[in-house]
Length: 212
Ligand SMILES: C[S@@+](CC[C@H](N)C(=O)[O-])C[C@H]1O[C@@H](n2cnc3c(N)ncnc32)[C@H](O)[C@@H]1O
Image (tube, rainbow, N blue to C red):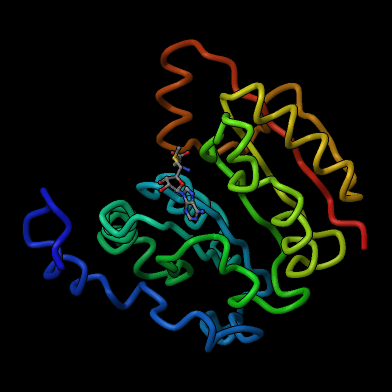
């Protein structure tokens, strides 16, 4: 069914479908096979309209990027951004999964990923929704399995409560946790980040290293 308010959704989705992995379970343990010659696979969860993944894929042509997003109309914009970029077309180092992050353990095998990016994830502030936060302990345990030893989670958010909660959760789950005082020199902006910076809001950043 066509999502409301999006003209020609099916046609547009079909046009970029070469970037979409329709059966990610079938690739479990074999993501590298999609990207010949790439030695690392990085995953962004909740990629939104794709500014970050397209920027990262350009900056790191030797890395394979998988971007996950649950809303079809949103991932369509991300896929179009990548599809219409001549540099990324040539590099061919990005693929997309349209699914909920809760399914991640059935899509990636143990030690398959080098990095996971959580950019401005939904904060789910109400206590009864804490299990939906992408840094809830059950997610962090799954990330631990699918990340290589020394693999990293990179998080940035404008939400101080989510940030404090996440840092506690990383530590409780045994990640080596670093709060960053400033953006790294090679920081690639997300859509939300650009907006928050323009509004003068602080951005909180952490890196959690997988110690298995
Ligand atoms: C606040 S937006 C941030 C978008 C982008 N990362 C940015 O920084 O501009 C959060 C995005 O994550 C997606 N998302 C939220 N929960 C998700 C989940 N469980 N699995 C996959 N995507 C999810 C939302 O649909 C939305 O596009």
